[in-house]
Amino acid sequence: MRIAWFVWLIRHINEFGFSHGLVKGAIGTAAVLLTAVLLGLTLYRHRAAGLAVGGVTVVAGIGWLAFH
Image (cartoon, rainbow, N blue to C red):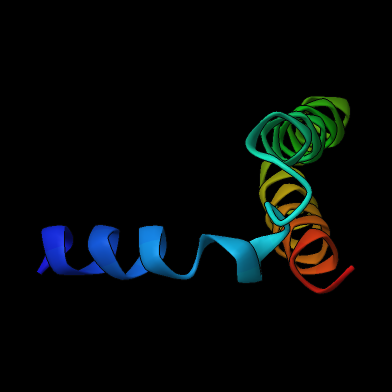
C-alpha cells in the first residue's frame, strides 16, 4: 500500500506545489516544517497546545503550497 501511495504521489507531484520545480517545492515544504517545529517548541510547556499548533501549521502550510 505504501508503494502504491508513493507511485501515486510521484504521478501527481505537480498538483502539490512542486509545479515550479522540485527545488522551490522542497524549500517551501522545509520552511513550513521548520515553522511548525519552531511553533511547537515555543509552546513546549503546554505539550498538547504545541502539538496542535505544529500540526495545524503543517496542514495549513502544505495545503497552501499545494494550491498556490
